[in-house]
Structures are given as structure tokens and as C-alpha cells.
Amino acid sequence: MEEPVIEASGIGLAYRLAHNTTETFKEFVIKLLKRQVIYDQLWALRDVSFRLEKGEVLGVIGHNGAGKSTLMKVIARVLPPSEGRIVVRGHVAPMIELGAGFNVELTAQENIVLYGTLLGRNYRFMQKRVEPILEWAGLQDYRDVPVRSLSTGMLARLGFSVATDARPDLLVVDEVLSVGDEDFQGRSRDRIEKMILEGTAVVLVSHALDTVQTLADRVVWLDHGTIGAAGPPSEVIAAYRGQ
Image (tube, rainbow, N blue to C red):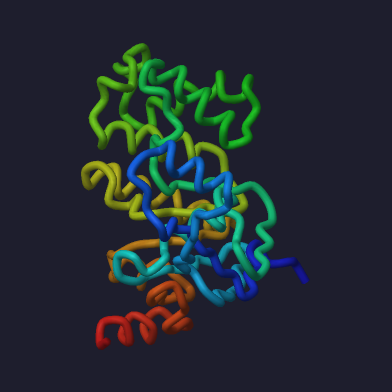
């Protein structure tokens, strides 16, 4: 039996907030050195457990501030959990903030190579993939243009094209299906569905409940950092809508 792509057991993440305020940075440093700064803990996640198998799609829903983005960052290994244990197996392609890894002073082609290597791909491989990625994103004419000149939508299209150019073991997706026009959204959906058929596991975080119900095998509803419900999409989404 194959091991799951994700095993999360009782994970929680707490942010530290300074409780006693100071007027100046100098006062803060003095209090910090004297260990006089008092911190509060804000639990963004608490006691979250789930498994994700190869080729399975897990939908994550919840109101703003429910902990969805924090969970994605824990899964993508950006933030370590404060408690509990999470095991993520294989190569991860996080699409949390598309284009967040770009350098605005570099050109589109330079950023393709840079972003791809940040995702763990070989430098020479990425050099060979520049043209196909630009073509898929519909940005061939912007090859030598600094990305600071591109619109937010164009940056997102470029980021999605790079992130999905090679099939990962795990795809972490945040509202990415709303990027671009209808044609690009359709091609994006087709590419993700092809990855799923080839065995890629997907964590899909979205407010688009109809999309989640269509694509997900299971759904987790996060409510103030804890699991409000988990199970079949129709049941969990109905409970979420009826709260």
C-alpha cells in the first residue's frame, strides 16, 4: 500500500503577538534584551488532522480568517507547525501567491528560470522550458519585458504556467482557477485535471464552493482554525452554507 502524500496529525500554529507596547524601537529592544516583552499567542490553527492520498483532491473551505492560508503555508513547508506533526512526501508546487517569487526588475524569461529553480527544478531544464511556458501563458511578446510592466493577471498567468509546467507530487492551489479570462481558466482546469489523473494530489483552497464540489474528493471546513466538518463535498458544503 502506498504511503499518503500528506499525513497531518493534530497540527497547530500559533503566532506570537507582543502584548506590552512601546513608544520607540529602542524601548522595544531594551525590553526584549531584559526579557520584559510579554507575548500573547494567537492560534491560527489548532488540532487539524487529515490524510491526502495520491491522485486525491482535498478541498479546504471557510470564511476569511479561518486559517486556510496558514494551513497552505504549513503544507508548503513555509511555516513549521507549533504543535502536532505533518509529513509531506514528494515534490510540492505551491500556488499560494502566484508570482510572489518573481523579481520585478528581471525580464519574464529570467523570472521563469528563477521561479522554476526556487521550485526545485534544474537550471538547465528551466532554460529549455522558457519558450513553452511563455507560449502556454500567452506571453510570448513579453519575453524580454521586466515583469514590473506586466499586469497582476499576466503575472498570475506566468506564475501558474511555471508552477504547473512539470508535474509535482502535490499541488497546493489558492483560488488559481479564477486567474485570467475564460479560455485561460478552462486550460488551467484541464491541466490540473490531467495532473490529477497522472497521480498528483491537490489541496484546493477556494471560496468558489461549486468548483470545490465539482473537483474535490473530500472537503475540510475550517472554522476559526479548527475543523468544523470533514467528509464528502456535498455534506460539508451543505453544512457550511447552512451555518
